[in-house]
Image 1 (cartoon, rainbow over the protein chains, first blue to last red):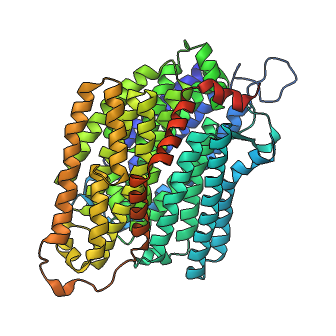
Image 2: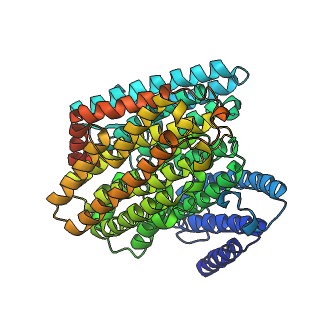
Image 3: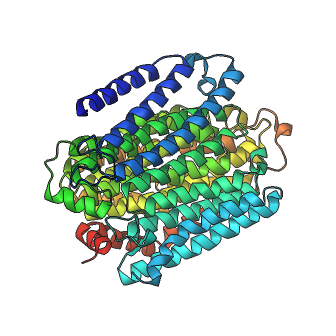
Length: 110
Length: 497
C-alpha cells in the first residue's frame, strides 16, 4: 500500500509538472490541478502509520493519524477555490486574447 | 493565559468583521469606504497598543484558540517581531484606503473593493501573528486571493493577465508550502512553530528536514519576489490599481522577509548559517538585478516594482549577515521601505491620473509634473529616502545596514551593496527629471485634477518624522532583534513551563 501511494504521488507529480510546462494555457492549468491533487495525496500520506486503518479504530496502535486528514480537507477546499478562480480568469483571458497559446498572452510585455 | 492575551485576536478579528459588514454596505460606496477606514484605524490603534504593551512588559501575548493548549491547538503569538510587522502593515493599509477614497479609478467603486482590502490585511496580519505553520498557509492563501482579485478588476487592461500570472505562481508557492508542512509533520509530528523548533533542535538528522527547508525557502522567495522567483512581480505590481499596488509592493512582499526571519531565528537555528549564506547571495543578486532593471524600464510603476526587488535584496543582506545589529538594521529597513515604497507608488499613480491617457509610461507622463509642483516635492523627498539620503528614514536604514556590515566585517558584500546603492540614485533622479523637469509634448492635455494627495503626503510626513526622530523605531528594532536572539524565550512563552 505504501508503495502504491508513493507511486501514485510520484506519477501525479510527473504528469502535473509535464502538463504545466506545455505551451497551451489550458493544459497548464490542468497540470496545476493535477499537481494540487498530488500534493494533497502526499499530505494525506504523512498521516498513515500503517496505511490501512481509518482514523478511528478500536485496535490500539494501528489507527492512522487524524490530523493530516483535517489538513488535507482544508487544503482541498482551498485548492478547489483556487482552481475555480484560476479557471474563471482563464476564461476571461482566452476570450479577450482569442488564443490558448501562452506566448500570445503577452500584453504586459509590449 | 489571561484576558490581555485574548486581545491578540483583535488585529485579525476587526478587519475580518469589518470586511463582512462592508460587504453589506455594498450599495453605498462612500459609506463603505468611510467604514473601512474607521475599521482599519481602530485595528491600527489596537495593534499599536498591543505592540507597546508587549514592548513594555517584554512578554509576548499568546492566545490558544478554542482553549486547546499550545502544541495541539492553533496558537496566535504576538511577540515583538509579529506585532512590529502587523503595525507596519496596518499603518500602510490605512493610507492605502485613504488613497483609494480620493482615487479617480473606477475600480474603487467596485462593490467588493473595500471588503477585499480588509481581507487582504486580515490575511497578512494573520500570517504574521499565527504560531502554526499550516495556519500560516491558510492566511497566506487568503492574502493571495484578495490581492489577485483586487488586481484582476484593475482599470489597467492587462490587470487580469497580471493577476493570472501572480495567482498561478502563488498556487505553486502554496504547493511548496504544503510539501514543506507535510515533510515537517511526518518527521516531527507537530506543526506548532515553537514545538517544531524545540524538536528540530534536538533531532536534526531527519531525512526530510533539508527538503522541508528548501521548500519553505522557495515559498517565501515567491512571496517576497526574491531574485529567481521575481518574474511575476513587476507585471503584477505595475498592472494593479494604484492603491493596491502601493500595498502589494510595500507590505505584502514583507511576508517572505518575516518568514526568513522566523526560519533563521526560530525554526532552523542550527541550520541558519547555510540559509543565511544563500539569502546573502540572493539578496546581492537581487540588488544588482533589480537596480539595473529599474534603470531599463519605460514605466514609473514598473520601475518602482523593480526597485522593490532591489530593496528586498538589501533587507535580505541584513538577514543574511544575521548578527543582532544586522537583524536590527533589516527590521528598520523593512519598516521604512514599506512607508517609502507606498508613498512613491501613490505619487506615480497620481502622476498617471493627471496624464492625458491613464498610464504610468514615461513617454506619457513626461512633463506632467510641471503642473503639479506639490507632488514634485513629495516625490523628491521619497526619492531621497529610497536612495538613502538624509534627512529621511531611508538614510537611517541604510546607515544602520552599512554600520552592521562594518561591525560584522563583511567588507566584500558591503562594497558590492554600497556600489549598487548608486543605481537607486540613478533611476529615481531620472524619473524625477522626466516627470518634473522636461517639457511635456502637449501641455493642454494634462488634466487639471487627479487623485488626492492626502495619503502620500501623510506617508512622506512619516518618512521625514522617522528620519529626524528615528530613536523610538531603532530602539524597538533593537529590542526585537535581541528578542530574536533568544528562541528559547519564544518557545517557553508559547509552550509554557
